[in-house]
Image (cartoon, rainbow, N blue to C red; front, top):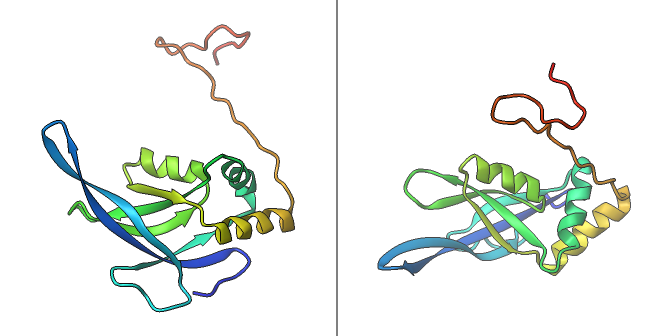
Length: 152
């Protein structure tokens, strides 16, 4: 996997952190290292890639404009409670979709180099307009709420 204009291979390592909640102890996972995949693979590292897509530029911009922009590491859950990194994205909507599907997602701050790379991708291809899609609101009886819309 080669670094390109739209793909950046990375090594991701995770670490377990024991957290006490009340009188119970649970294991939480967090990103330990996020390294460019140009050097030697670190122990316990997983090779993943962040890939940028033209139609997601508006979402990247929203993330980069936050006070603390994040990368989202989407993991696979093999059933043993140990997440396995599968991909990395800077798109919050992709991460939210994964979470809705009960897929583990870890976050970490965007390293400066990756932030600059995403910024240059957006600059090179132009800003994309932010498009918000509204859902039709339906009440509990299944009828459209009165906003001038008629049920079909």
